[in-house]
Image (cartoon, rainbow, N blue to C red):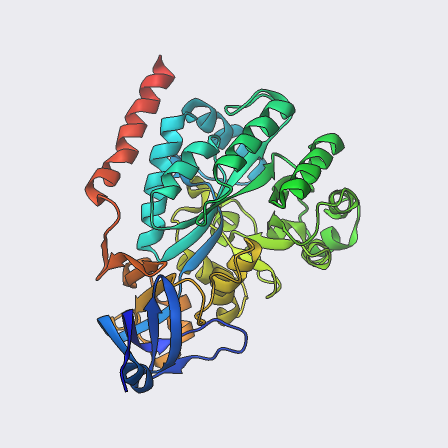
Length: 436
């Protein structure tokens, strides 16, 4: 029998499909052709069925879907080094906002986004959602990289770097939407700024435009309710919980399927449950929560929930394995954390039919992680080794739509030496501009 020609056959030691009911597999392989997964099955059967132009065996590795960073602010990679402290609202207002106002420019977004994408690829992240002051710059960088991107369109009534007033923001958003309407790898979404304090008129207008364009909406609920010392009181007392803000967003028709709510543990379990009840996807950013004095979200639902890195200025690395570890240490089951970093994040971005699990027909966005080192061994379980012991330097191979982006631990799509110099260039530049 003539074997079918395909592009790539990968044989890892372990394969984690991350699909519904998909268990850890050994002795299996994955076939890739035309940028998509052709088949997943026993290695001997796939070798007999396919003639691959490239065969790759990874004898001490786990193969997973590429990680999905469901909320990032990549240009903030150039603002690392800022002091980080809680409470969150004070840090955002007194430290991050002034630094970003001084730095925000098209080339700042361009350089920070390039650096962030390269860092994420090296850590196995193949898809992400990003919010920046100049979304057209982030979109252009993403379009040239081997990644899948959802780029936020910031909408505000106040003048900002991108536009003057609500009408101008929406006009620029619609023009950019038209530019990327047919792009299969770069999608756009609407991101009303400070939704906890935005007017009903702004939120209603965003909802109407999103309905017309069939666009997704992301709401950062970090400012939805004041902090309280006792989470039990916070959940039960409407005066100190997020219930009024969530009720308002629900009444405006914004909490529904197609909305991503970026949450913190400070919202409380009752608020998280209500958001999920309305159909909104939830995104937790455990590392940045912990650094800003919040408890990492440990009880996000398995359905329609993902993990993000938030601002690298607060959270540190753009590393979904590290986010999984932070969530698991806060009490989330390790397998659920991995689910949120893959298929869960894909569902939040509306990409669950395309990515997030290893199934025939889906895009071949893949990551291979080595589990054979002194610090990272699978004896206690492969999932536990991935979540509690594996670090981003264990990522050996990354594919985006079947195209190698990292091979043998080497980043292929970027000049690492050039990118490594960017943070220092911007530190000097911002100091000079501040002095001027």
